[in-house]
Amino acid sequence: MTLRLDAPARRSPASPVSVLVVTQVRLYADGIANALRELDSIARVEVAASCDAALQRHAAAPTDVVVLDLAGIDDVASARAFVHAAPGARVVALAVREHDQDVVDWAERGAVGIVTRRGSFDDLVDAIHAAARGECACSPSVAAALVRRVAAAAAERRRVAPHQALTLRECEIADLLREGLSNKEIAARLLLGVSTVKNHVHNVLTKVNARSRSEAVALLVATRDPDPVGSGPGSSRPARR
Image 1: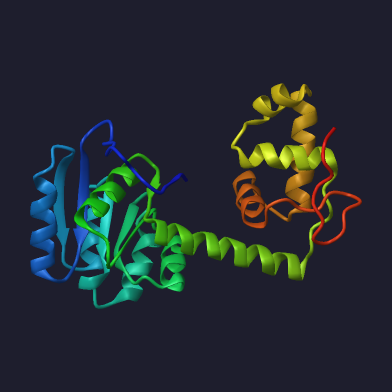
Image 2: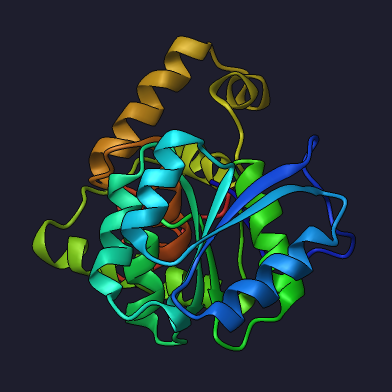
């Protein structure tokens, strides 16, 4: 899932997007729906007055993106349950409070887009377009909250189960993982076999207690360079000659 922090030029999906807006406030529903219908990139906009109605409508005729207007939904628990109950729904949570816990809570529950109460209509449109493309557009404040959560989780992980020190070669691999390189690209960069790189990547994931490559990258970005073998706490990596 790609976090896009700024967008100098709006990038629309390849095909028009269908949207389902969920809110109990008719004024919000009409305002959002009418504004979205003015956009060429939006093919269809429907409105549901409750999460139960939205779930039935989405099951009968799935939409590309579901916008949950939290400012217009009294039962937030139902909104949270909707994210799990609607299979394949790409949910954008609208009007999320700008508190780290609220932002993280919606991200952990599966919302692929988060627009805070300070967000603009353009922010909502960007989030809808990104969700339709399988990406995630969010404001710098939302991204900061998510990064703080990753850093806190990494610190807790180190406290509970400190990871083993990485070797110098594994530190090189970790640097390239942060850059987003594939195993094949890493192999070409370091003049190694792909199978050798796979073994090193596996060792890095094991040592940082990550369950997936993406989680390892998030942890490595949050914690920066793990100490290589022979380095003490707070020391820097030996310079390469």
